[in-house]
Length: 142
Image 1 (tube, rainbow, N blue to C red):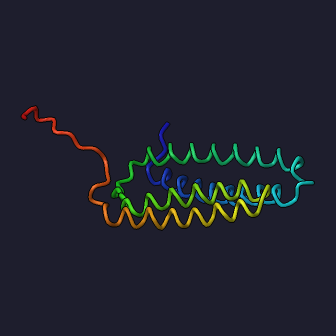
Image 2 (image 1 turned 180 degrees about the horizontal axis):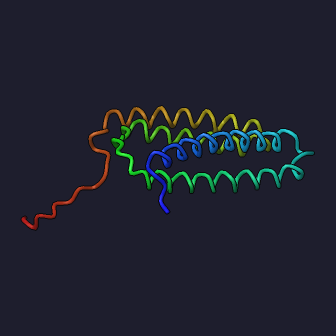
């Protein structure tokens, strides 16, 4: 039995809201386990449960969104935004992983990340028209 589109849209919004809330709890639990090593083992099951719940809600959300057939315009970010965001996200996550082992290493990674992000932004702004998907001539004419 399929739900009406209006009900699916309502469930989609609810699922997305709950996913965001679970993600916030997941980040909080991860922060507590990093900042208080004594609690790490006791928070492991909670983290695993929250992670499973978030993945399940993301799956349900994608099914509901697919089922509603929402006609949203596709937004394609510029190469400057997409490249810079990839560098920043990767660098910040690497710094977070190293922060407990060595604050100096984390600081070096953050500084390198921001320098690299600035270089990527500058390059992509100047050469954005050259960056993108490959396009091949399929007409068969030479």
